[in-house]
Image 1 (cartoon, one colour):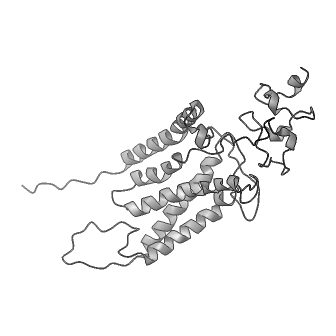
Image 2 (cartoon, one colour; image 1 turned 180 degrees about the horizontal axis):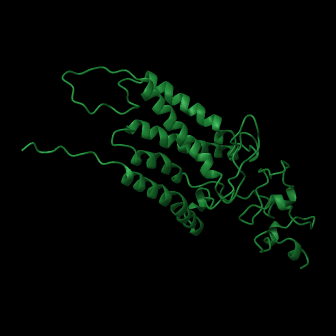
Length: 270
């Protein structure tokens, strides 16, 4: 058909028949995601306008989002890499757990889809929760918890033996360590999302700007959501993340450990 010629997306393959608009007009370019499939009706394209109703499939149901982020597991790679690279005991378990939570928490905004909040809205997916301000807020919360926490649970304890039990309070260094660690972990989330091959960019500058940002280099394959994760595409996503996230971080940790001066062993006086 003639329609099959000009309705081909960027991938070079024609849209399935039930995705062709009733008007017979081609899909606008800015509505074509990297996957080659149209966005659901409740998602907004880059130009901020709703997709026409006639872009829905014949069944009348919205299609699931194809996947718009690295998998949630991979966002834990940054705090784990920092923990491995640090000296033993430098990052205590509770601070590591807080970093992992901070690295994953921005993706809680996927609830926006269930609440019918448009994708390009400030509170849609990859919006406010993917901003540097959100990372700063999480860092401030970590600093408050470190300050009021008992027994300095957020910082490394002293390895020196004590003659009697002491009740050490939080120090400025421990509070700063907790805040910086959580901020880096939280900020790593939108930075990784900005390196993915699909979806909208991340709102790093919210609330001062609603612009969505992408990195100049985007090698990471976007992850499908829930139902499609355990599929061939999900496996391809995990392999992509293994190649572009886990392997480089592991290499960096090993290299860092190798260049660190080893502690001198005590000499036998005899």
